[in-house]
Length: 218
Image 1: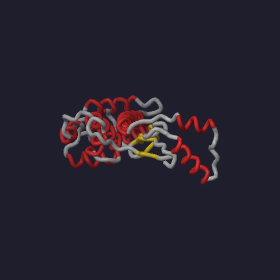
Image 2 (image 1 turned 60 degrees about the vertical axis):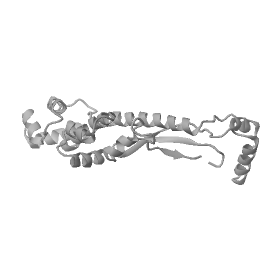
Image 3 (image 1 turned 135 degrees about the vertical axis):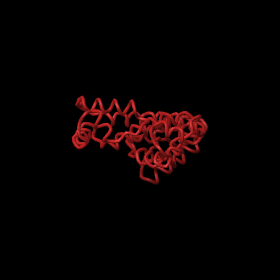
Image 4 (image 1 turned 90 degrees about the horizontal axis):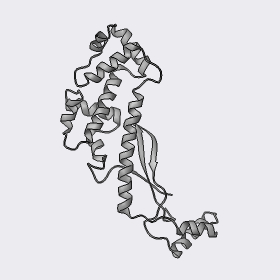
């Protein structure tokens, strides 16, 4: 910004929605000087703000100086933390806030145990010995999601964890979490996460030296 300050913020997402930011404090890339402080005074004065006080000068001159390389490393860590928080928030969203019927608990366990298989609504309803109509209605009430949405989100969250391993191909991950085609996997992943598996992996610090992040100025 006009005062030489900089800060970095990395978004934390729940699905496609940004629910917060992990943010660094304000720092400088170059050591503050008397000349830069005088320029800051002039800029503030032009905006009708008087910062010509000993306390303001002391705060300005003591601002931490951080190199761009170090700031990039900090942003990499923030990106990693943000991704883990996103995974946790999505996992929490899969859980019901209230005690759920045993039928739903049994269905969830079956989905977990057979995640890589074909999981049709009819198959799971039969496992818990109820009609498709009743199961569908009860599942939506207990989880807040339709059966298809829940299965998709569960598979995408597992895929996110597997994408942390750079040795696994995206096609391998797709089949591992239960998708029968890479095209279907890419489409569902983007719908749930807001980006493709390739884009998600590219943001991970270990997979790319340039993760996506938002730079804000003061």
